[in-house]
Length: 210
Length: 294
Image (spheres, rainbow over the protein chains, first blue to last red):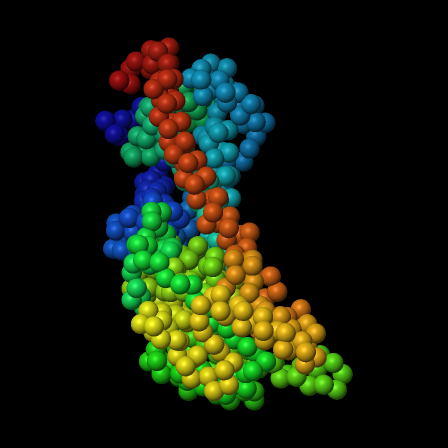
């Protein structure tokens, strides 16, 4: 039952819709961007209607992602402030990766790893947007000297590689941690899931008991 | 504008050999700045042969017209009035255009397969039907040559008349030059001719005369004879040591295989983690606590 009263709301319909908007635009951006990065990926331009269409569409999809990512940034920035408990969590991350979470400090709505991921994504996204404007040849590149455009090209490629790696990691973490995709698809999570993975948040949602 | 297809030395965004069965002689265009009178016949001949027409611009109070290279003006004369020695005015006129680098930054930066080609004769040519209009070639060029057309979002530049050269003719600018300031031939012959010109200029009091054939881009297939080769920048900003540059080298060099490999490793790492460590599930104890919710 999706509306099971025993379940806890983790993401509102708006948060879910916006997350998937960012996710879809990110996938389109990664595919079209890789096409220009290495000749081995150039055939990906066929997904977008050829090389010229890929070149035209990529920056506009970037604007879309920038907007939806920006909404996520403002929604989640306070929830992602690092606390001493999060630093403690991160210092135990090796045990977590090993599949042993018995000694992990209690996590709030987001754990230390999720918070670190959040800030790394924010940094990558900021670099991508700034460098992307500089290398957007049709509208902005003529405003900048060649040396700046060259630097921006490198920054864009490096930040994109980092962001793709982070998102692969993000997707994997969601697959690895069973039922967490349900939270982003349907909004609600089981109480057992919440207690297992986000104990402090679970307590808060239960009004302090258990 | 490519007619030859059997003698391609290099092709943009291509990792396998290009058709290269036919070998051609390396060619070179020599521009002797000391012989140039600034008549712009070469500019006219270029537009005539390539059948491009620039918009009629405004007079800026100088001889330069148009003021810069455009998608229709693939070569322009740049005029510098300088007093390098007190009381001795010099009028240095440089025909600007693609240098046809041996190591072309445009070709290195281009992401579209076959949009930039380099023939075995040394000519670097744009194949506009493969161009996607991203402008990476402009980013990669150390001489600021390619121009993006507002009409069709393709880039254009001097082809060194690859179509004429393929048919055994010299480029249109060479054909028309009335003073012999522009000459064309085999790389060997032209370098020898340039050296003779330098000797002549030195005997006429230009102690620093020399050849501009920058090695930072592996040499070029358009070279200059300069009266003041020690100061190339006085010729309307001719770069002293042009090269593809560390940023473009990094972007289109090491970054490509390293990043691709890195991303592949992240995917492989995730897959191996899953099959070795197993999924992260709710523990049996906690499941028991919430048995009612099932």
